[in-house]
Length: 414
Image 1: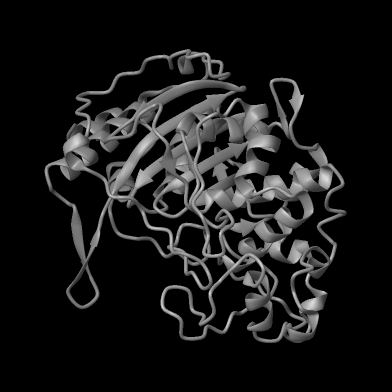
Image 2: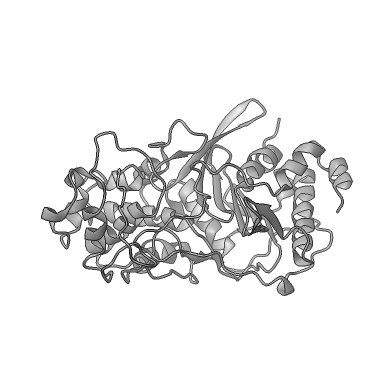
């Protein structure tokens, strides 16, 4: 589909805006959860290779109601709720970009001193309204049954598991001191004021931990890294914790939360996610990568299908309830998705969940979201009972703008 066709069909956006939405310039990634992760004592997560020879060729995309596949998701017709002209043009634009990528056009661009970086595109878009899946489209080599890497959406699953451990009394409160759950740490070796850190400090990325790396290839430390010494290496080698703890988005805090979860429940992250979240949500297929110390990675490394991502979003948006089952407490969901940190930025932070404001037709909505590098998103607007999932390969944070400027307006009736 040519851009002039988009201009005719895309009632919501001008041609110049549409070009901007599909453009490949990387937006400033100040602290929005979409920048590549900087690892310290863990194994870096890499975006998997995409085989362009396996790309589907969709042709012109017209709307069809999602398929009922007995996975627990109810389906409905989006045309009952929205004018789909703009969304359909948007989906055809995504397909056009994927076909350019498939044949080698716009695959790379120059960055810096002659360096080239791989470009990518969105490969799935799902929308749910009033608890029902109303749109489901896959591009490139994505499929309904294919696990998609989640990158930092993994962090949001860690927060859910910590919340469930609190709901069950295995962790007293997010205000508890971290060291109380890390008995393997020798308190005489930790940096000054580490004993003041709470679980909430870790959940909000506001611990003030600034790891001072030694020279060890791959992880930043000399010793072999084990379950017994991993937490201590962080806490003994951080700079002193200051009173004015500042938000810094990284994987260190989540590494320590995974240890906390394991010690409090006796479960790995994968075991806790399966028991507390995935089984109640009817999620059967998933994966987690292993960390340098042998536990499951919490900062990235999870794989889910797009439909199962939507289940996570629907449960979270509905105050912890899924199909009448209280999976997580309403109190935890409210605290988890509230704004706690990064308050002066366009994207604010809760307990490993993001928020930003979207103004549509004079009304401002707070969009809650889980976000991952490379263009992975779960968006939720509880006031509208509207949720969307995006997955991408090698892409960027444009879906934040897409959801705000294309999808929400289509479902807001003036």
